[in-house]
Length: 371
Image 1 (cartoon, one colour):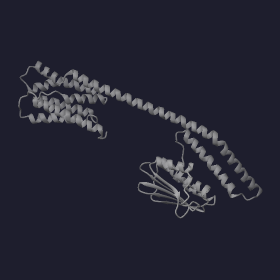
Image 2 (cartoon, one colour; image 1 turned 180 degrees about the vertical axis):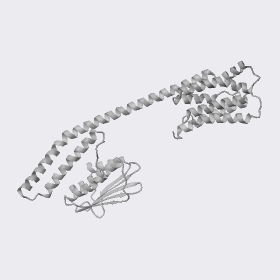
Image 3 (spheres, one colour; image 1 turned 30 degrees about the vertical axis):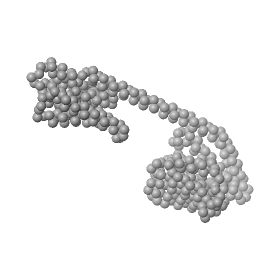
Image 4 (cartoon, helix red, strand yellow; image 1 turned 90 degrees about the vertical axis):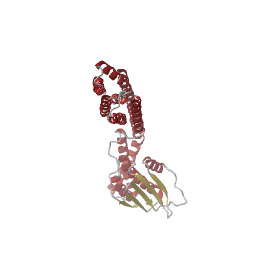
């Protein structure tokens, strides 16, 4: 457990208990002895040990119990305040049997410690003094308080787990609903495009005719769309456990872009690293969407894709020499919006704007530690 508010509170309890014990010792009636410094030291240790009762409740229980027996054996008639806190902490941590056993031992041995300090005192009086130093009612109250808080925390944890399970179930239902909607609305249309384009290419080959580049591009785009849709549906239906595209698939994107007549170069700088799944997929989507926009809107002849591994940041930049100019701001579209949302979700920054020398630039910086 970290030293946050809880740590400060534990230290305050420890210091408060120590102060109570020392004040009780200074104001109490006990015979002066050469062992008085040891008695005050035991009081101090017993109080300060409570600072660790959340981390080591059994150890704190043993330390405070030994301190009580020690200063009582020296002749310090001081209530066992620190031990009561230790019993509370042990029971709250779930060590009920240990707390009960330790308390039984304390009740049995405390009169013996008092007899060691006052050998001329009657046994009955020693037992009464021990009962005053560690009253059974206070022991029961400390244990009951610890158990009550433990049960309350357990119920709160159970309620939190129930809320998480409910939210997870609703997310699963929503994913399945989206998958069904995508399947019903897109699968048929994409299949028609794919089949018709492949049939047209096949007929052209059979007749010995040249196949237009645009028809080949439509066929390849149909295949890619069908594969993308299938991957997306699988991801939605199995909670994202299916294989997803990432940085390793970027060269394939570049090759497909070249088949459309676009001269694309790919440069990867820096020491390659294993990327988190979300970051890996975001890189693929940024490059995919950028190349798609270039093919559809830019009327560009050349483009460059650059991926730069930096110590704590991954930089993706896609440039083209298309018709965009600095005085024509880009029209907002779903593609750019989707890229921006992906980058922002990972704590990164995206700039998509015309270049001063003409053409368009997409520049994204993704922090690898945040991802």
